[in-house]
Length: 110
Image (cartoon, rainbow, N blue to C red; front, side):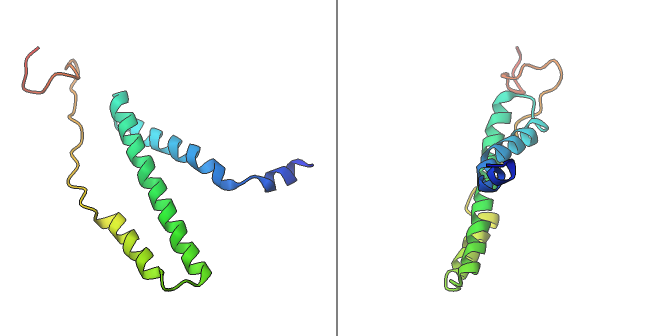
């Protein structure tokens, strides 16, 4: 079997989870310095990206199969994901100034 034939047999979706994980880690790593925040936000971004990709794939799949009955449901789910869901306001982690202890609260003295 040639290399080209092996490449054609490979499912392209197997590369998606590692790619999403790498993108999420790099994106979070550029915004935070603490590993706790990097991993927490990387997991959150990874879930957002995967949910969006699955919802988009489902929408395109339903359009392609001719199941136009489910298209309004898919559009409603996508809009709920993008603009709603009762997530509440997210507050970013506190800024840590140079020389300040990360675990200490801003008003306390060490």
